[in-house]
Image 1 (cartoon, protein in one colour):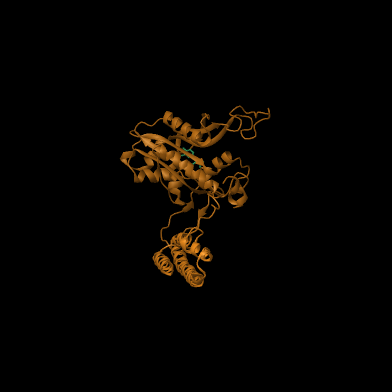
Image 2 (tube, rainbow, N blue to C red):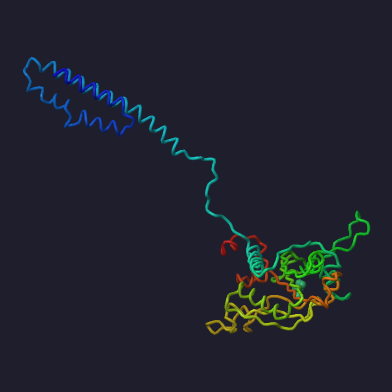
Length: 357
Ligand code: DAH
């Protein structure tokens, strides 16, 4: 009997020593010390033994059970620590990685509208180019066919820069009043055909609910041998629909600009009343003032004098022709977002921006 106890103890201790996980040890505990295991059963049945053996067997079995229990406990402690270490390594969190914060802020409405306009024209095959904000009188007025007495040249309508005392022979510079100077600059640089849009800042000394001294325009220019007023209408109809909705229509109204002939203003059918001039309530539409139409930009066929001002045979007005247009980004943003005061775009009140995030 004692031999059997010694065997059970040795087998148990060997198995415990060989165990590599706490789960295995739990199984061993059930197997060697559980209710159905041999050793505890021996102990339970000690009373059936002859009285002389009871003490010896009972003691041996008890010692074996305690020893096994102690071996399991010790090994569990060892393995649990190792398992925890392994888990800590496996689950390690790199606290130096950048977090994933909730998105904060967003693009300014003017940036959004500018990018949308750029995307629309890129999709139509136009390139996006930019030009200088300080211009010469030549590019801003002369090359664009402005008469010598054109009112926009007046210092009350244009910010002129003081000539620099450090530059000898410095020519008169100004803050560009429109993006149109890039028409001639582009044609000086690129051979026809050209199709470009020019987003950028422009400056005029005006300040009220619909004017700020600095604002933004997008100029457009498409020159080739056979570009007609029909192309102008087709391109601008498609652009108006991309910006204001697929149901929009446009109309061309005769106008005057020095650098286009003929010149037109483009109206888009009102997106608030659907062009009817009346809201569903029957009230007069406040956006188009009951007319059903909203002016969105100036345009026209590039004046032959502008092509001649480029001074390159490639732009001989007998050979090439095309159209130009200019639109105000603020105006488009105000129409699209229903703003009534342009200046809110420059106050940087996040509540305005958050409304459209
Ligand atoms: N430059 C004009 C302005 O600032 C806008 C404009 C009108 C641009 C007609 C054009 C055009 O290219 O063809 O009011």
